[in-house]
Length: 202
Image (cartoon, rainbow, N blue to C red; front, side):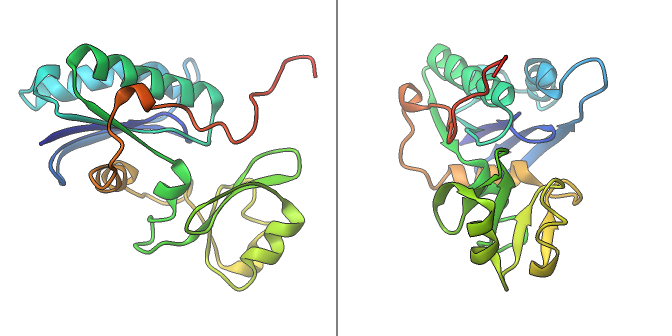
């Protein structure tokens, strides 16, 4: 089974192509100052398929991050996944960025990402939502916590690991999680908005 996995929700875009769980190619794209990294998603998918000698019709499953993360990034990757799956008549699965990040150290660690408004998106084996930081402090105490650079200093007494600082193969993790998912109907693939998108002027 050929799997195309991609993510534009977090601090960079990654696109991974695999045969079952055997990784064929992974590419990571950073923002370049002129364009946000999600602007390169389609062109990167096309190039990776071409370099692998495959066409879109050779893909059996599309896997994508559904958030939380950048609202623009979530919309971009979920929309591309849905459109491709519909046009190719193939399966598509979504995986939360919180679940993906919980696996970067090889286990199933607690994840706390900045959610603004004095909250953090919290994952501890399941998504706990956007939790007040004071409550998060209590929960993460004496645990390894995967976080982002914005909250790294806050959790300095809890052995924090910033996913933004490490060279973690998030595409490979996404593939491994995707093959275990049972919901593969692209019609049910939706963005995971734990909090409503920000409204300008408020």
